[in-house]
Length: 392
Ligand SMILES: Cc1ncc(COP(=O)(O)O)c(C=O)c1O
Image (cartoon, rainbow, N blue to C red; front, side, top):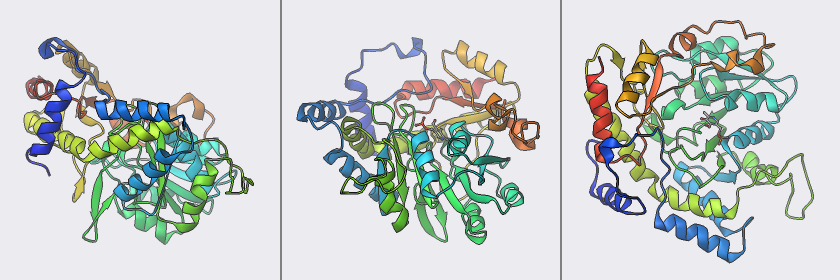
């Protein structure tokens, strides 16, 4: 765990605070749950790319793919149009469709489940673990049938899923799709090796939605894999299934990322490790502030993992009261995800619509995110910590 911010990160924070921001009376301003980072370097990269006239299919997309693959320690990466697009592409790459079942956690953003429905397969909803809130491996085991083609594990809020999921999928000959939309840079030790999100499944899917740990200045996503066959098809499926001779080899569509977004994404990636340090530093500050306050539980980190802290979610008995309390302190807070996926109207005719997933349903209205993003100033972090400490 990071105890203190290193000097590079301190310098970055100082520069960021000086750059492009109007002077603020921090104590008076509302602290938002997310604030996208935008620097002169990113602005220059965007403008230069527009000036170049090459707006699609260019050098930035290729370089972003390579740099992101290197960051995740994988052999292949393909930038695409969103995290949802990445999930749909991943399912297609695994030839999953009508008649197939894919096990997903119910406590996640709805796209994890609807991506399965979008390819004509059936999502099977599993419960989550009561300590770390990621998919419960034992519950997954019970839900495997001969129709199960894959599991989508979600690194919820930036916490990597239990590596036992990897073993379970291998043993049962089913694919593992990593929903890493919230986990850029999160990692976990497996057999003594530090493994980073993006390399913890057969295919991984990232989102660059503006609130994520890194972004691209709009909608965007990334698919990563170490599998040679999948890697070979990846760029094609997001480009109409075409090969170099412009012959469509399989059903695909346009899910490409624009050059401007790739250029911004490359600049953001350069900052990712510093930003993670800031998020991890804030998480330590918040945990210390919560201490043994009986009204709030700090989130737990899986042993031997480095959390990505996309969200810092506390557990409280009365979330409405807590959100109102934070609001009075001018701090945004929000429940994630109050409706489990299988209870959304879109799944009203799903066989599991009326099923009770006990852990999911007992915690879904109690998990509340407070601001932890890397754009927080020291004063803002201190204000959040002090609000957590004094909650009564
Ligand atoms: C866990 C999870 N999966 C998938 C997605 C979808 O990503 P996008 O919004 O880029 O389509 C998100 C985005 O919020 C997410 O949090």
